[in-house]
Length: 480
Image 1 (cartoon, one colour):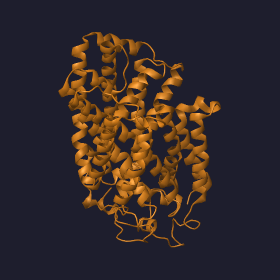
Image 2 (spheres, one colour):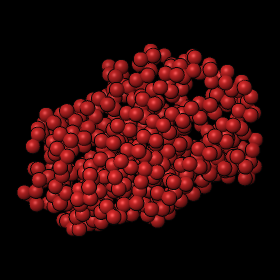
Image 3 (cartoon, one colour):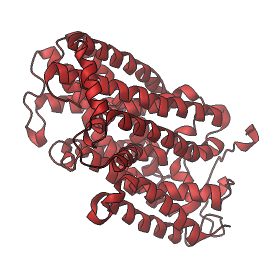
Image 4 (cartoon, helix red, strand yellow):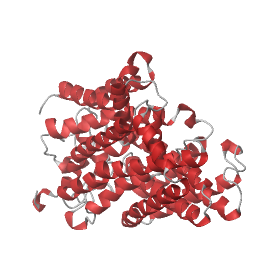
């Protein structure tokens, strides 16, 4: 790909164009493989990511080797998926909200962008809560009070919990308002630093637990967890849950790849940040969880609970700051920024990305506060799988449209015009065939999570939704 492939659109209809949504020229892109690598590092290293990884070793009835292999397979699969979804945005410099106009229509794209935005806001609120637990841990350590003291207050959060939650919410807004360059710098610092602290925590756990830690790891790798599924079904379920965890980022990966200069940099960052980093981090999570069994007699999957029990104020503070940084980093990139773009896409002439971000923060603040008392009751796996099932058809349609229908050639200027004769205007700006494909596929993929008759396919839920959405789109729209 040469520089002639890169385009720039300097204007468009006010209802479709603003500077935040416009293609980014090649000379203004300053992300490389390292930034993409750290996008995934922070996603994997977040408190939610750690809890999910540790839970997978215990919840599906698999031995550790099969679980570990399933996580690596999921990493390879996600890498392939984001290489596909990220390529058009590297080429054209546009975010997902604009990319969706090619398949959904210049007005119809507001529908999938809104759906993606709602899911992003949901995730943003939940991750904000998880980041606040790290801050609460640090506050309790400094005050000398017991972690969790005062819990059960308003919406299940005590006074310290609310203070920590407000601190995290305010910090994220401030960093976002400073711009994408500062977010990138924050990720580049947080990603490597988390690994340093995780390794230090693992070594301290090993030092305190002794070689008994390897016996527990051996028991996990040789035995099974708490689930009752067969080996094949459990393996598929782990792969499916991990893919669903990344579903929100998979569909809008173009929001990040548009800042990268070349596809080669994107692919390199994806390789080191997904299968390699996922394997390394999952093993560390398993190691620490096994050590916690030896030390405390129970399998703790929340790293803040483990750190809170390690008698070291310095390590507690460093770990709290680190987990806070990792969770905030991915929250900004995977949830805040996409939601801001998606909301701005609803009315570009009136809503900038910054305004969209403030709207996101306000709604997400309420959602995050409800996590403890309400949302978490459906369980982490159910929560992740449901959100992934909602987004799956949108990914399938994005890929089918660009690679099959559009044949990798977009008329970028037509994505920013309401001209009825425009290539992406369809019927009044809406491609109702694409909307129908989304609806049909989403009903089926969500059904695999919640309907007993389809739960045998639950591990395939995301993939089924994506493939079904793409196939239906091609059948309904045909090749141009």
